[in-house]
Length: 137
Image (cartoon, rainbow, N blue to C red; front, side, top):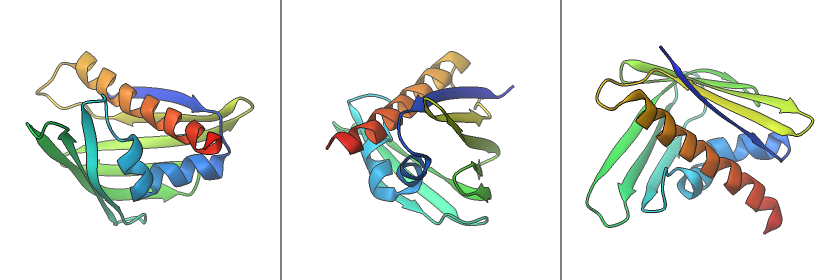
């Protein structure tokens, strides 16, 4: 059973796409709560290319690497990737109200499904706020 989270971002597709795949932007939005942050990020956006980001608690008490390989890229439409033995798919769809972004992923077995869904949704919500805030600054 896959989990899907989604949001709509009120910004042009080119801005939404760039913010999703830019290491500097990823460091700005990739956290599920204010007490976590992403300290490093790298992106080789091509099929077979690698990505990674280091997420850490701001108090230094814990952290982990999120890394994998891109398996399919359709610019401004789709990103598919594998991370460990799991996969995920990110879809970008232009709509009148903005760009609808959905992320579907294979859950892991350590944490409850609701916990995983909530965490990924919080990160995607941060992404949307980040992109919408770019045009305001």
